Image (cartoon, rainbow, N blue to C red; front, side, top):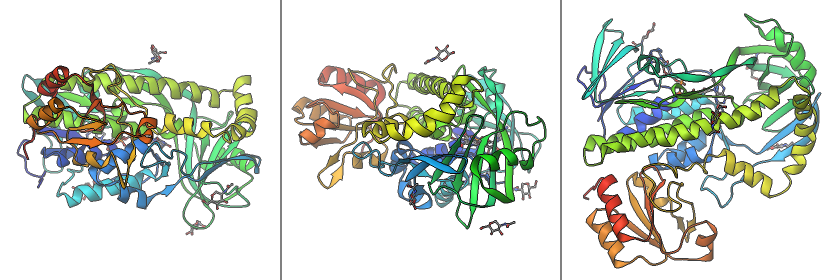
Amino acid sequence: MQSSTDAQSKPVLIVGAGPTGLCLALWLNRLGISFRIIDQASGPGTTSRAIICHARTLEMYQSLGIAEDMISHGSKLQNVTIAQQGQIRGSLKFGNIGTGLSPFPFILSLPQDIHERVLLDHLQRAGVTIERNTTLESLKQHDDGVTARVCGPHSDHEDISASYVAGCDGARSTVRKSCGIKFEGGTYEQKFFVSDVNATGHIPTGDVNIFASGRNFCIAIPLPGEKRYRVLGLVPEGVKDGDLKFSDVQPAVEDNTRLGITAVNWFSTYSVHHRVASQFREHNVFLLGDAAHVHSPVGGQGMNTGLGDAANLAWKLASCLKGTTDPKILDTYHQERAAFATELVNSTDRIFTLVQARSFLGTVARSFMLPYVLPIAFKLPWIPTFAFKKNSQIQISYPQSDLSTGNGAGCRLPWVETGESDNYKSLEDSRWVMHVYGEASDEVATLASESYIPLHRYAWSDHVSKAGLVRDSVYLVRPDGYVGYLGTDPGELGDYLKRWTVPEQK
Ligand SMILES: Cc1cc2nc3c(=O)[nH]c(=O)nc-3n(C[C@H](O)[C@H](O)[C@H](O)COP(=O)(O)OP(=O)(O)OC[C@H]3O[C@@H](n4cnc5c(N)ncnc54)[C@H](O)[C@@H]3O)c2cc1C
Ligand SMILES: *[C@@H]1O[C@H](CO)[C@@H](O)[C@H](O)[C@H]1NC(C)=O
Ligand SMILES: *[C@@H]1O[C@H](CO)[C@@H](O)[C@H](O)[C@H]1NC(C)=O
Ligand SMILES: *[C@@H]1O[C@H](CO)[C@@H](O)[C@H](O)[C@H]1NC(C)=O
Ligand SMILES: *[C@@H]1O[C@H](CO)[C@@H](O)[C@H](O)[C@H]1NC(C)=O
């Protein structure tokens, strides 16, 4: 049970209750670590913002026991059309494009406000209260912890002590600024708009409809209800800066989509940034989510990356607080997540720069590559598979991490069906597990039982081999589903277990 309203100090303070902070709270609760979670806003977000939930996120949600609930609130992305001036030029079939690669072989479309509500629901059921109207003002670090000064509904200045602070406070992070951590990168000149409109006229019937032309780019997504759409895109060239209204983008939207807009329910514009924090950890303070990295919405990676940060940090904090692991484990949070974020910001930057470019190349990309080449390419079976692997975040891997020992370690445990079930079933406890596909030696079995780590043995088969698993090797899987040790040397395995794992007698 968790009661966060008392002033007593807790080992962890989570600053920010956006998707990243909420997800971290669920993990810590699951791992038996108590915490406080504060947010300056009076309530949860009410706008849709991120709309894509990727397979890797759902896999991690499965370990938290909330994947099915999340899926029931969204819909599987079936198809995307590409159109010009109201005419369909091509369509891309999605559906189960990742069959055989993940227990969730699809892209889930789920607006961020609903996503956050599902996370909140589960926290509420666990008895966790979010302290709202509570703003972090500054942080001070000392040898054995952190003191956070907050301004809340009951007092202008409360000092909260915690062993660790998790900064999940978004792109303008006070946590990041208090630590003097740099947030380098830049801001694109081109502005984006998002709106929720009622419209008449004929619109292509894809789950997502992309309208690309020589000059413009916008996307229309049908919303529940008659003739309601989310329309988002680039603010067209030549539109005045400053206080934009929907009427400023309306002519370009109507020309591009051939829709007649009859009502505007919500309209917002935003600038897109590409920045990565220079450090994700400063002593006992950590940065997660938008506080650590921001980039263009290409591929719908932003929110998912924050959720991945939370899954990566939670069990490491828990191991340290339980006091049995080498505290250097906390360094691996930056090693693993900053490397991924930097690569992601760079790759989305390249694509985004092209899509928004006013140059000849940008025009060719929008008016020819996107509508004519992509739909044909997507009919080749390996292209959708490639796109799924790249986008779903299942290929994230940490080979350079101090936590990865052995050739091939650091990857996500490859998923494989095993008879009636699959090899992810054993990950649902969110603790270390050992897998062997083929024969496990007696020495390995002894090491597993001495360290109270469950050993799962799976029969070797062609099917297992095709999934990319190595015969007779030991897969020591971390609580977040990544392979820590991979190999066959009992000596090496024994050293690894001693240094990093937390024995949990059951
Ligand atoms: C208009 C808009 C459209 C977007 N569209 C997309 C999209 O299409 N696809 C996509 O992937 N992403 C999109 N994003 C980005 C996506 O919303 C973010 O990546 C995601 O919300 C990040 O989650 P987070 O929890 O890290 O941060 P946030 O959601 O920003 O949450 C931070 C929380 O911290 C709180 N907070 C901030 N400062 C303090 C403080 N000092 N003290 C206490 N609390 C504090 C805030 O109130 C907030 O609740 C969009 C964002 C916006 C604004
Ligand atoms: C937060 O503040 C708003 C007004 O600023 C108020 O309506 C709301 O009740 C407050 N919520 C809490 C939990 O204190
Ligand atoms: C897209 O899928 C929906 C059902 O999910 C279907 O009604 C629609 O016709 C499809 N559109 C295209 C362009 O394939
Ligand atoms: C917009 O559409 C929604 C759902 O179809 C409807 O409830 C609402 O009344 C419409 N708004 C206007 C201003 O027509
Ligand atoms: C990303 O881009 C920056 C700046 O252009 C560069 O310094 C960095 O090496 C790149 N990193 C990766 C992983 O590509």
